[in-house]
Amino acid sequence: MPFAQIYMIEGRTEEQKRAVIEKVTQALNEAVGAPKENIRVWIQDVPKENWGIAGVSAKDLGR
Image 1 (tube, helix red, strand yellow):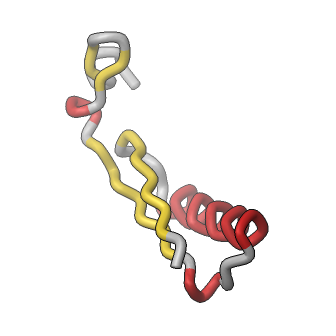
Image 2 (image 1 turned 120 degrees about the vertical axis):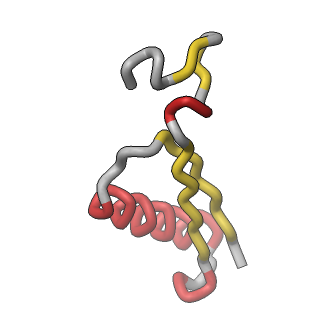
């Protein structure tokens, strides 16, 4: 059973997350032949202050 973990900076809409889940599921189905019913996708929203880019938090960068 494939299990994909996706870490993203918080702020995506529910519609965007649905699209990620759908497309990652499709990609795993095509790449490894796993039945869609067996594929799991977990999206972890990370607070902007907990995501660092080049030594600075995403929040401080205005992301």
